[in-house]
Length: 282
Ligand code: PGA
Image 1 (tube, protein in one colour):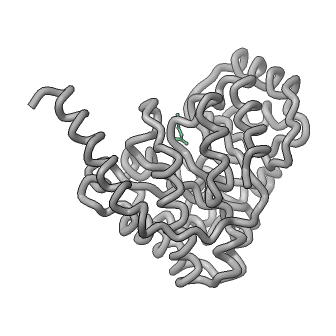
Image 2 (tube, protein in one colour; image 1 turned 90 degrees about the horizontal axis):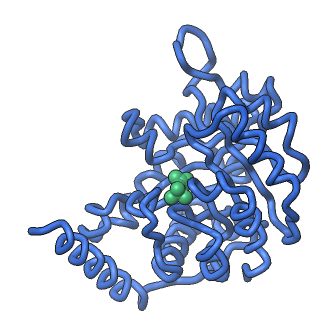
């Protein structure tokens, strides 16, 4: 089968599935403050990062939104000293337990000591490229929270899993591994980032309905497995090819409480526009 044909079939299958699920869509709606994260990943130089900070500082965040930027570890200190309010800082990863003989790692204690309030855990790139399992992400989440670092916990299905109709089951299994480690109170300090792997860095964003469907499913699962109160308060970000052009429409969906942005977060103007899409949220 040619690549083009395979791509077309995949798209048709995604569309079919979302039509099938649309009728079963339960909307509970999130009540938390809109929150946008910028995941800078492994990008930048001192020079480009200084320019990005200047551009972010000069952009006007007019919406009621919490904003968290996650620079590469080596530049965190630099970014922290340059970015003004309301920008908060996150690390992109941390170790699963207390620091020690773990070459190349950074401990949650170090993040806490360096006044870094957030960490992104379980990103699909770390799951797939560094072999992080659901259980490992659960343990990391608990350790970071117990150390006083808040967590953006990423979940999401691959294209093959979506095509097999497993989207929600994959997300639920990822969440269950976190649920098994944390207390009900811990959820106050967790943001869930739903990032379908097929949408990350591909330019192929989930449609607002596709994203809403999974967000509503996740919130329903949270309601049944944690509590209705936590389910309504927990913020669920969408991530995967969010940009300045598609953010407003996504933000309107009742269960989308923010975004986790990769590529477009490296463009200050675009990122500020994405932050301000919070004004379109319900
Ligand atoms: P993207 O990445 O916006 O470049 O698709 C999102 C993410 O990986 O957090």
